[in-house]
Length: 344
Image 1: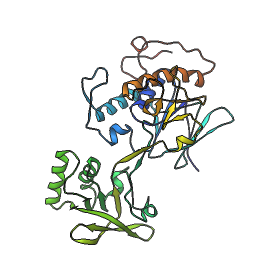
Image 2: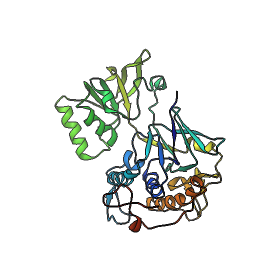
Image 3: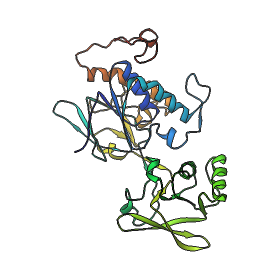
Image 4: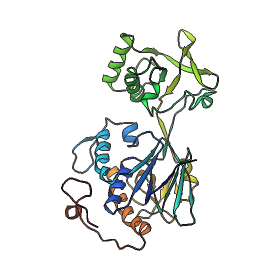
């Protein structure tokens, strides 16, 4: 039986704008549950450039992307948001009681009166290597994300890629797996220099096997992966035993199923009005980089503003019989914070 989650606002996208929406909703006593195809909160900031400095967040002359996500998670902690991670929002359906039901790729159902689409540039889908039978082994030894490192304990793991994700997971899993093999098409890596240095040290000490100028061209196994076929530029083709193959070639943003939800779309972005960032479908809002309107700027701080106004509007959808009165947090405080009390 598929899991069913009930909340006040379903937020599709756990990037910085989606996370900040939890805070603004929480101030208005609205519960939030976030859905994201990535295995952890933070969106692009966590998955693509966690060490990249950001300079246009008010109050921070400079803040690393990963640190900003940590700060947002700390900020929303008093409101206890729920998360469905590693699952993509697949379809929506209006219920008889007026609520929306959002179902994910794994069948998890989410019910709420309002939906915030905060999917950034869309859902991030992994760039898959051109291997003929790769889909046959997905979830049977082939994974595009490392969701739970413990799954790789005492196993043989082949990682492919030359960026930060491939390097970082090679370093991390070297302490858990029986055997780690890192494969890269070139001898130069795109990741952070200190990570490259660490990988080289692990290879020299024999803790991992490093194969450059090569790529995985085939997968082997009967229902479950037990080996990969590698094509080397000079040594030709050979096999490596493997229980897991993790190709980490980055992510491609796509609007995905959202394009089929009856929303007004303009060049892969959702049209909204600037009064409250509502879409053409009542009860559905779009905030952050995924929306478009005259004068739109794709900045995190603009997304924060959009989330704030969307929450004010969503309050009327979630609590149609209640009156909304705006109050400053300097007066009300925040529920759950030491020494402060939130009053509605």
